Image 1 (cartoon, rainbow, N blue to C red):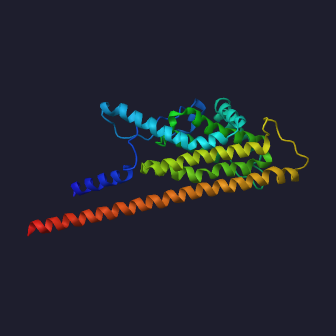
Image 2 (cartoon, rainbow, N blue to C red; image 1 turned 180 degrees about the horizontal axis):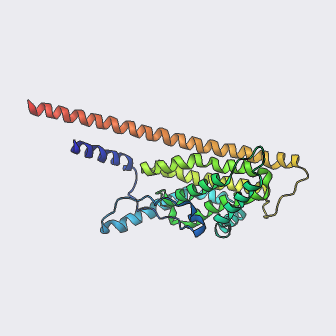
Length: 293
């Protein structure tokens, strides 16, 4: 019984790793003290490897990270320099703890509103997930802190803008927290299986967060970094916000489509695994029957 269980587990691992190169344990994204409030879970890691293999595994992880960086290159090329600079700067200058304190203050000031919905807890939960997602998903891209800082900084920029333009704070918060619906399942997939498609989907999620933050910033700030001026709320809604909402709908569709493809692919792999295991079981039974005769 134990032997059969080991055989099943080995085939299961082989199934999910057959199209990938073994990777070294992921590098966690360094968190400043302000980011450590969410008590992130320990980074995922592979079983300890013999010392003699450590160099090869490190090279493999670097190679995979390079491939993933290339996959993200198109988005980074499209991202305007103004946004790159703003996101990178925000990762250093916008303190996460201070940002959440401002959100708490906003909640306190609007608690008596009939349509009040607290935002601090939701945003804190999302930022915690984002930090764990960045630091725990075993994709090798953590070797590039510039990319990690851009993603984290981009979200901080959007929250900061939302606090300045309070009329849109709730809507922007809802949009930001929507990403949690996709990053959460992706993190679970990354824990369960190690296949190229998971990594590709994770990279696309990074890209979509950056695109969302870029488009959100441009709603309120022009390409020179100056606050936009509009003659009326109606003009602003028509020229800026309505366009952004349409772009966000496209981003959500892209995320859902990528997650659906991943789901169906993993289900297909599961089916193939169990089919092969059933075939092996029958061969074993036939072999036992033949020998007994």
